[in-house]
Length: 601
Image (tube, rainbow, N blue to C red; front, side, top):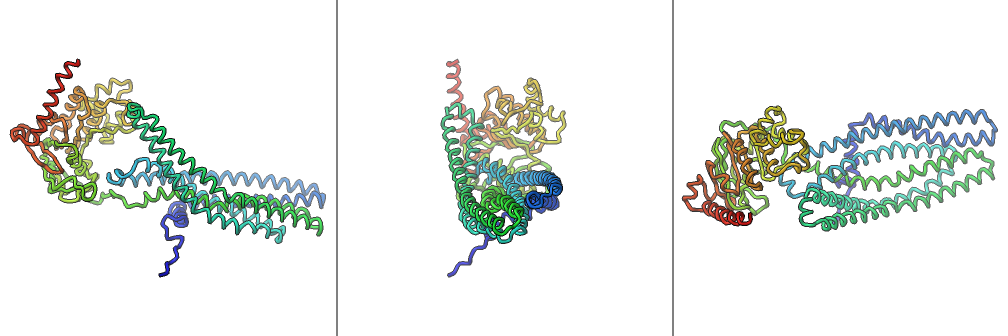
């Protein structure tokens, strides 16, 4: 059975397809500016060819005609030509840079917007540095590829055509010597392209590993210092740097292999031209100006010819970065925009799970036919061993993941049938690991509701017992929180997060172990803030410290993805089931630790 030969357009990320996409999807948006730059590059190319032609005229006027006035006129014209060339080159460079900056910015915006349409499952399978590398490297690679194309056509190709025109005009026979360079050069370039692609991919991967190690080391610097991991992290990043260095050295060897051949062929062509030109001047009495003009054009044409010969190599290396970005942009969104769906309209904010199933991975269920109800305006607590599925309940309610079976209802509306934006706008969330964004305390509270007034921000901070410590800072609400809130203590971060949830003023509140990592004093303040947050709101709270949820309206024990017990605190203790077992175990631990702590004090 014969195989159908593959076309260069069969690979959706092949060089030919990518170049066509970049030109038709992005370059065409700026076609007027590109056309202007192209015209300016053409003027520059024409000026270069004219200067080579005029050099021969000067030689003839000086050594043949002995005409000084003609030489002065040609000199003045040469000055004008070079001024025009300089102005055209400057203007084209500025135009191309502005186009590149616009395309770079647009690609960064588009790529980030695409990442915001991905689900939690999409991110859990990847390292964040992969996206950083794809975003920065890919966006710049696209502009580099477009600039290579426009410069190759507008600068190098036009210059080469104009200079070859001068050569042919001066001596058609001698121009044939330049053609000996083309066939061997093209053969070598084709052999190198495949290797260039492989090396460029390896470089990208190693660079991503460097960023990954750097990011983890800096974000986890406390752990690095505490466990004396400095040498370990240095070894990891040194290995990645060594890999990049090795790949870069290999790229340098492979990408420049055409240079010796080009130089040798160029030398042969120049030597042949010199011999033939000298013969014509000496033996046949040809004017020396023709020979000089031809030689100047040939030498000036040599560099653009070399750049054009290397264009395919450079493009294929650059297009690897463009592919990295476009693979993300082209992939189907895992959390596509669903604003066309109806909004969630709340009356009581009653939350209900009906026979809900969910699994992060196939055949590994996390939630099994779970049924629960969180009554309006009341606090429903989820307790149980780690890994039982408690945090997954909140993730499903926020639609960070989609249930694989059953229904999740709010006031009788299936949340899968309403827009995510309207759903999440009705929910305030506070987790154990509070994330602080770059900026001030005021900005971090206002992220709960960007249109919140100053009074609303301050009132939320007061209700979260955060106002006093905030005003203790010299800059008050303008205090910068640092990376991930590093300038604040754990309790302070939690109270800022609660203020962020309070200013949202949402009818549903989700709390995921918001006091688990705090000391007793911080826990007391945070718990008071939580009481304000939960007042008159439908609240679902996850807690390991059972004394923090003893007064909840309903307590649900979650084990193995199922509700195995539910009721009020006193009722569950009387049943003497799983909740009572957890409660006794925690109190036994506390009673055992208390005397030991007192003795050590």
